[in-house]
Length: 108
Image (cartoon, rainbow, N blue to C red; front, side):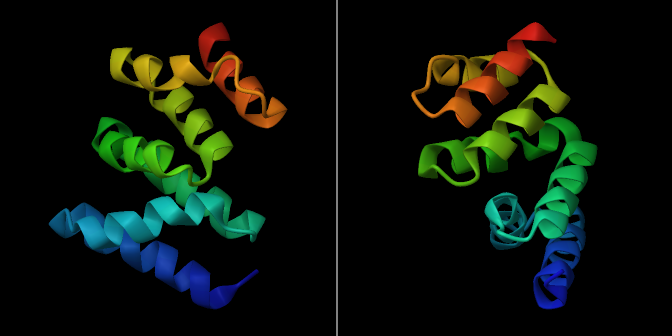
C-alpha cells in the first residue's frame, strides 16, 4: 500500500465532501486509476458512498480516459438514468475490461 497516496485519497474525500472543492474531487477521482489496488478500491468506495454527487467527477474521468473500467463500475453502483447514459457508449468498447464493466451495468 502506498501510504502517501492513501492519505491523499482520504484527505481529498474529506475536503471534497465538506467544501465541494473541484481540486480535491479531482484527486479522489484520479485515484480510480491508481496502480495501488487498495487505494483504487478505497477511492471507489468513497465515491460510491457519495452517490449522485460523484457523477460530475466520474463524467470527467470518462472524458479524460482516466480509470475507465473502475469509473464504469462505480456508475453501475450509483445507477440511474444519467449513469446509464454515461455507460452506454462503452458497451462495445474494443478494450475487453471496459466493455465488460459497461455490460455489467446493463445487466443490473
